[in-house]
Length: 88
Image 1: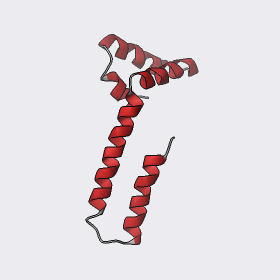
Image 2: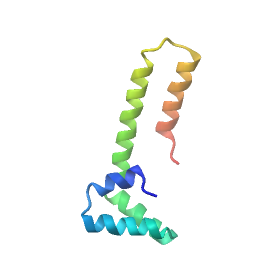
Image 3: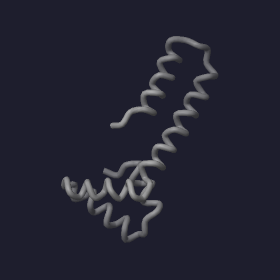
Image 4: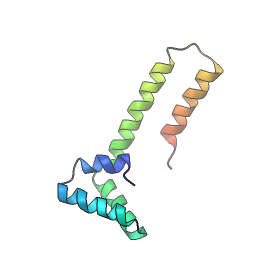
């Protein structure tokens, strides 16, 4: 499937390269998916998606500061931290 890191990688690719990557995704074989992962890593898709995620998490945490301290707010802040650290 098309993921945020792959979409970020598309931004750096030619139309032909994007079409090839989409075909690899469509094929879905282990070999094709490995090629897509390599493309995403080489094109900075993962790093760009991580940066975007961090920005969203910081915006969420800033928004939470507008609420009084509570167990609920603490749980939401911990969820933000978990999402920032998760790897899969």
